[in-house]
Length: 483
Image (tube, rainbow, N blue to C red; front, side):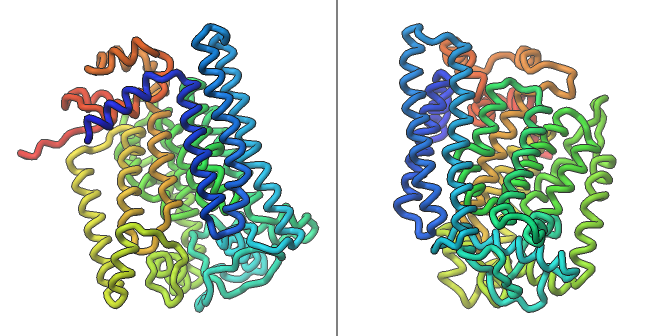
């Protein structure tokens, strides 16, 4: 099975960039169509109906342009320009149009749910903070309301399962003179994501092709577009993780620590990357910089968490720990047919014991993999965290498929870093020359050098290689089992 997967990656690497886009957009169109047909929530259906059209048109244009380019009718510069235009149009059709529609329908009181409950949860926390109250309630009784006709609806009984850094995104709802559409928490969440993501991609010195693919995953494809339109609380975390990884690759340990520390104030989902980056980060001279990185992260993390915990530790623990784990009096709405959820539903009387067992098993597997193959570069850390978060999503007792955007995006962020210079010291082409060609990939490279370079790092991470080759190509350090 592994050899078949490797062969599939080789075939994908040999495809021209336009055909890669065409298949990606086609898969996105199928996904969006499925959401439109099968989703129970009105906001999901609305996104699916609009996004399916945008992705289908983009896929059709890419297939037609790829066919024309094979006949010589399109020059490479024209193909690159077309790909950029299509990304912009897809963002308009799959993000901006449905998001604006949901904002207006919610503000005007059109019947139906026009956002996910987390939008109102963030807004209520912002309202409480603006009134000098603790955003974490001692005895919350609901999981939040599905926002529909009134973005100002008061619901002071909902859990707030996020860290204190998420509160500012809800403060805009307390500004009285703003139009109702702009008070929606998604406006702040989306604007922050786009701003931080743009800074990260501009700071990256990877090729335009790699940065364009990263932009697709962060914003244009369903990994970004669907949560951005319907909820969006994970996207600021992912944008900060991307910026932190870019800064770490550029060997700016203090800035990387501050950015990833800021991500750690939003959600616990940023903590694996925040912690595991410390032993891998280097400064501009190539020296370990774990202390400077950690201090920079703690400068932001400690005071923000201190405020959240210090107001009422019991309330904080109830909202941020017990509720997400499904151990509170009110069940978390997160649900999926994944292993952890299935087990805890099958044996509800043993939920606490099963949660502890799943935590131990997941941690054991993750630590075993980390102990054998230690990531020593930012890209390798991103790949390992992607694996760990995939494992956590499968085993968590209260989880949802949406959390899979973390491992998906982290793999893309790692591939983006593989196309960057290391602290400005050595170009990617020099690194490839240093480690030499990978066996079994020469045919694909000769067939389509430019498109192969776009996913070369991802193939490198998956393809069979010698122990020395793995060390040079992916940034993993092997630990002998005999020691």
